[in-house]
Length: 190
Image (cartoon, rainbow, N blue to C red; front, side, top):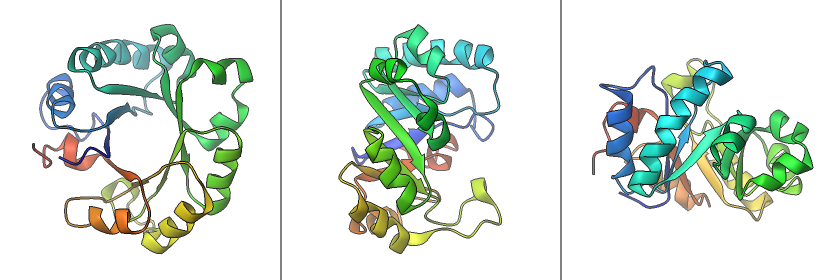
């Protein structure tokens, strides 16, 4: 498995037990796992994140929490991934807690803004057709290339990425890729 791949979780499409799947993914050679469970309340997310971070710690894989800044701070997780509007509103005090902050971007303008505000890396997508964004036109590798040229921080492509097309996102300048379905459905086995 390529070491510049980040797994993004979605327990709704996870085949089998969610935590067993996390254990397997943590041993697959990915760089990190983003716990992206947007439908949960912060309390429900906290409960899930507590067990998730234990698994990541045990398996020595980077745990990245998503959206819930206070949960990450309370659990002592130093990596967070945020939607750009949340990142823009984040106080300097809370921002300084994190060693790594990723930001979701959908345009060159978003990427430039995220970089100026201090993002460590960005995700850009969706690059290819994906079930997660049914009916929405993918942005494509040309848009990805433009984003990669516009910023100095690492850009991770997201959306419809698999073993067949990952090479094209790297060729476009991406530092790596974020994959959800391939991991949650067990298609990317090490």
